[in-house]
Length: 132
Image (cartoon, rainbow, N blue to C red; front, side, top):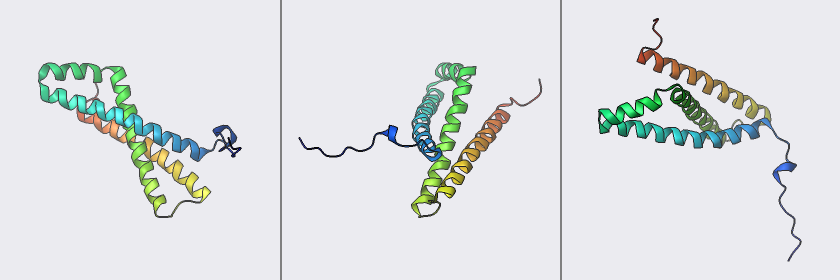
């Protein structure tokens, strides 16, 4: 058995802002996938008839279902915006430390703003913004 050096463990690294954005990118990819499965389930229920659609809407229309839909929306939009950031990096631009931090902040702000816009537009389309 040789005495080869081992790779440093994660505990050796200093936790950085860009590291958390990378982890969040991976997590939002997983969450967005679950959201896509929920969307496909809703489409299948829509095509399956009134009873299946009513069941899907009972779950997705509940307060917990609406909260999950907002979370899925944020996950998708963050992953989308950060994916564009990665595509820009592939061109060799934005790789300096300050640029990477700034673009990370832009991605977070863009994802939050886009989530608010999408949720607002969805509520408006469904008539939830009208006064009672």
